[in-house]
Image (tube, rainbow, N blue to C red; front, side, top):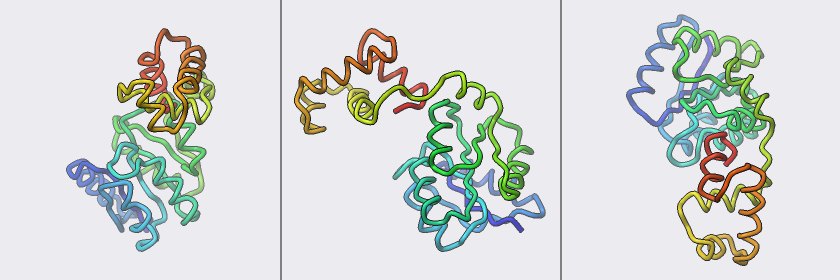
Length: 201
């Protein structure tokens, strides 16, 4: 039996996924989590072979949960199942120790196959997304530029961003200006939107 931990914040979706996988004779759901914060404690308790994580969850997101899980329980194979096929997410996921990245609109039969392939030590990545990630290239933003841009997504003023990040207003302006230039857009709102769409924030 392949022991699976399932993390998805929408109870109905989680229930449907659990029911689908349980129909397979060789897969057993040993733990379920409704938030990113529950993933690690439940995994350490149930010792799953494979963890199936959503990205957008309350608490910490699936990518953060994946990184913690990979560090604490390296034997567990991690698959990301998401609605968001953003190339930057795929790169982040692979850096977090994830072995598979699937989109929720894929046929349900692919899910059980992906779980088995992950268990067998293979990488499982949606081919369209893999192609898209390769053509996008890597994230051009530095860690600090991402932090400043992420703070700008909430519509905060330069002064508010500076206060929040303990930087001077001039420094914030510089980071934003470099990010705008790198992303080839006109202003910080467009820069934040573009970076978010590509999964770079």
